[in-house]
Image (cartoon, rainbow, N blue to C red; front, side, top):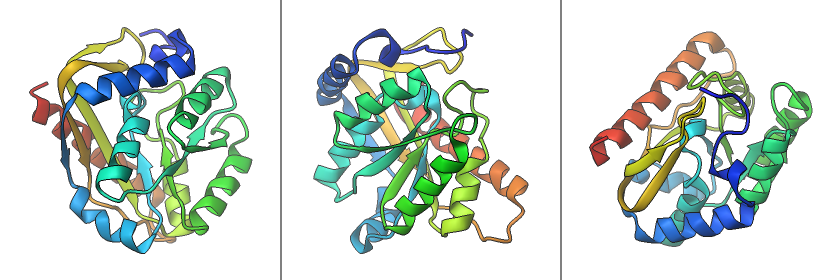
Length: 223
């Protein structure tokens, strides 16, 4: 797998990628699972921390916009690194009305975490890509656990799949759905992280839950 910039977001302008995502999204035969457990949080404006693997992020901003219309979901603030890739992601998600917090574990990590804590404590949902921006693939970084432990906001693993779809030959096997594909969005059960929890164990629990949500989405589309 090739590291670094690796996907549709790197290949075309963010405005073009957003337009393509909307066009593809409008044709998807989408199934959503696990949303009922989140409705009380949305209604009460209790913040959530979503996480999704890097290879499945393309349609997530479009999915959030759709769920805001259909299920009363809330707009999220997205963490994007300070790298060139992060700038591309930031411009892409802004096309869907999402705010961006800049920083990563390697660049501006402490400042990004402070901004995320402030965002969550203000009652806003956030979305993190815990194996981004460059991997290793499907290995959870520490930021999700730290943010959840500090703020008390539940972590919601999110899995997305589509078939037919193209898997790019990249480190993250970046998924690009085909028009009119079967698609599935699966929310795992919200996970609360106590401040005194063993964070290494919690990290493995969240990683496993995120893998399970992704595998469930794959099964729903027959992938």
